Image (cartoon, rainbow, N blue to C red; front, side, top):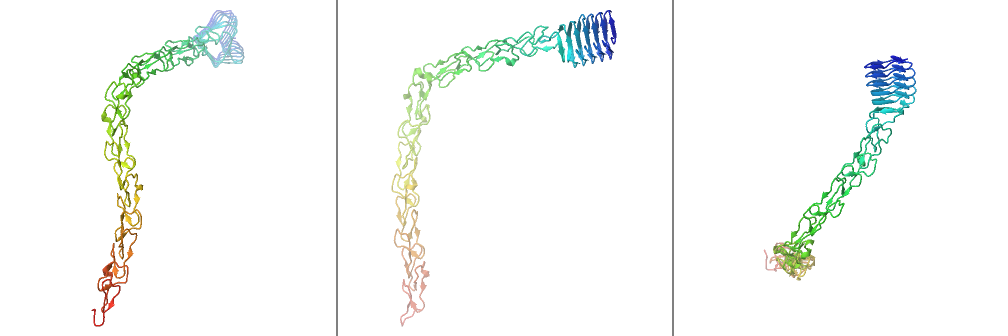
Length: 551
C-alpha cells in the first residue's frame, strides 16, 4: 500500500514542491497512513495517481491532520471511494488553494470521502470530477467552508457536480447574506424593505431616490417602485410610498427625487399636483411656487391664459366694467372703432359712417372705415362690409349710400358697377333687367344693335327672316324689296334689272330689252337686232315700220 509513502505509527509525512505522477497502490495511490502524524501535500502537482480500493492520492485511517495546500490534483482515481482523499477517523482535513480536475471514484466521492473527519475548505475548485453515485464529496462531519459573503454551502452530506470556493452557492435573488458560514439558500433572510438584492448580495442595496419598496424580498433595482407623478422621494432606501408634492409644487414624471416649483403664470392648487395649471384669462401670477393666481386689478385685463401680468385696456375696445376687467378685453366689433384708451362701455366704439365699412375688429382709428367700392353701397352706419347693389341696379361711384336703376337697353346683375348693354339682336326699354336673357329678341324683318332700346325695321332693299338679328341682309342681285320690315326679297321684273340691295327694279335702257326676271345689271339686257328697236323697259324688240330703218 501507499504508492509513494506508507506510514504506520510514524510521525508527520510531507510532500512539498513536488510533481507526482502515475503513482498507484491498492490503497492510497500516493500516501497511506495509519495511526500516524500529519500528512501534508504542499505546492505540488499530482496527476494520474490511483488506488485499487480507496484514496487515489491519500488514504488516512485513525490519523493526524491531512492537508492539501496550493496544489493541483488532476485525473487521479480510486476503485471504490475517495478519488483524491479517503479519511476515516482522522483528526481533520484542510484544503486551501487547490484545483481538483477530472478525478474519479468507482463508488463514491470522486474527490473526497470523509468519515468521522471534520474538514475545512477554502479557495478551491472542483471541476469535471465523476463518481458512481455522482458525489464529488461525501462526508458525515461538518465542513467549514470559507465562502464569500453573499453565498452559502451546506456543511455535511453529499456534494455533487462542479463548484468552487469562495463562490460557493450564491444567495438567490431577493435574499442576502452578510455573515460567513451560511448553510442554506435563505442565507440571512429576505431582502429588507426599501432595498433590493440581486443574486449573491451580501448587503441589501437601497432603492435609489425617486423609488421605494414597501415589501421584503425585492430581487433587482427594477423591483423598486417609482414615485408616481405628483410625488417625490429624495432619499435612498425608502420603504413607504413617496411624499405628495405640497401645494405650489408639482412632479410631472415618474421617480421624481424632488418637486418643482410651479412656474410664474401657473399655479399648483393641491398636494400631489402632477401638472401646473395655467392662470385663467383675467388672472395672473408673477411669482413661482404659488398655489393660486391673482385677479387682474381694476382698469386692466388679460385675455390669455398662463400670464405673469395684466394689460391696460387699450384703444380699439373696452373693458365692460371695472370689476370685470380681468375677464378680458372686448374689442370693438367690425364696423366700429375706438381711438381712446381706458374705455369701459361698448358705447365707446364709434360706428363707421354710411357709405363706408370696416371688416376689422378692435379698430383704433376711423381710417379703417373704407369707402364702399363701385357696385356696392352702405345704407346705414356701422357696417362690417358694404352691400352689393341688388339685381336690376348699379352704382358706378364709391362711397355711395344707395344704388341707381339700371338703364334702358341694358341689364344689371347683382353688384354691378355699370350697366351692361343688351346683346346685338336684342333690345329692352325697361330699367330693371338683371340678365342678358331678359332682353327681348328682335322679330323677323327687324334688327337691333348692341344696347338698343327698341327694334328697327329692315330698310327697303334688305330683309331678315330670323329672330335676334343685329343687322338686316341686303337683297341679292336679281331681287328687290320696295317695302320696310320684310322677311324676303322679290324677283326682279321683266324688262328690268336689280342690283344688290335694290329697293325697286330699274328698266332696261332704250335699244335693249329682256324677258328675264333675274337680271343684276343693265349690261345683262339684250340689245335690239338691226331693223328692230326697243323702248325703255321693253320686254321684247319691235320691227321697224315700213319706210324706216334701224341700222
